[in-house]
Every structure is written in C-alpha cells, then in structure tokens.
Length: 191
Image (cartoon, rainbow, N blue to C red):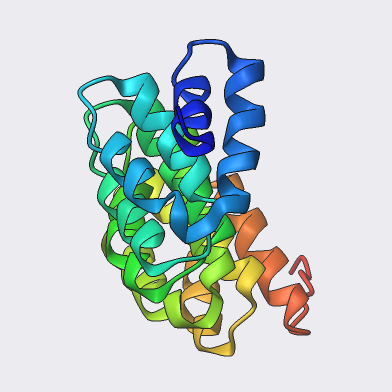
C-alpha cells in the first residue's frame, strides 16, 4: 500500500485523531492527493465527505475550491458547515452565490460560517451582501449586515444607515459597528 493509500485509509478510519493527522499529511502531498480526496468528497458516507473537505480546505487548488463550493449544497449539515469553513480559508469570488444562499440557512452555525467566508472574500462580495440586506430573510439579513460591517466597504454605507431604523438590536449593533469602523460615527441626541 502506498503512502497516499495509507493516509486515505487513516483519514476515513473513524478515529478523529488519526484522521486529523492524515488530513495534515495529505495536505502536504498537495496535487498528488487531489484525485483521492475529490473521489471521497463524492462518497455516500457523510463522515468521509466531511474529512475529504476538511483536507481539501488545506490544499490551495481550483479543484479543491470547486469541491468546497459544491459541498455547500450537501444533504448533510455538518458537511455544509465544513465547506463554508473551508471557503473562509480559501476565499474565492466564485463561491459568493452559494455562500449568500447559505446565509439564509435555518442552521445558525452554517449562516455564521458562510458570512465569515464572505468576509474573507471581502469587497467582491459587497454587492451581493447589499442585495441580501435588502431582500433576504431575517437570518440572512443579520449575517449580511455583520459581514458588511466587518468588510468596511463604503458602498455599504446607505444600506447600513437604512438598517438603523429597524427594530432589531442586533441589526442596529452591526450597522453602528460598521459605520464606526468606516469613521462615520453616529451621535444620538435626545430632543
């Protein structure tokens, strides 16, 4: 059995400690490990898909990013969470539509991880985030406002101001935070 085959077997062994060590070793193999990892990313077993994606997140390659983007639509929530986290470590503009869609997830962790990945993508994600604040469900809107606040792009100023008039403490907090970060402090004066 080759080193690659041994590492793949350890990755899917069910022993998390062995799997993590194998993931790090496979990542060092880089392109050599990609075919095996991409095959595992399509496995019927959710745990195998999770470990494949966890490892692909460590390999900066277009095929790895494409697999992470596809996995945002996986039936297993844990796999989708892993994919969103992986895209935070490998930010790519191509992931924006799938990440914006994940912002609306009922799973709050997935929504938060998707927002974190969009923050890592930065300025390229701003137009889609602005549209989400205007048209998304409440979960998506909150995560989009948080992302806009942390990206700090001036194009978000009008939408952040608009959010201040809403009846949501969290939305108001992130809008104020974003405006403050951009140097646009707001002073409240009681009439």
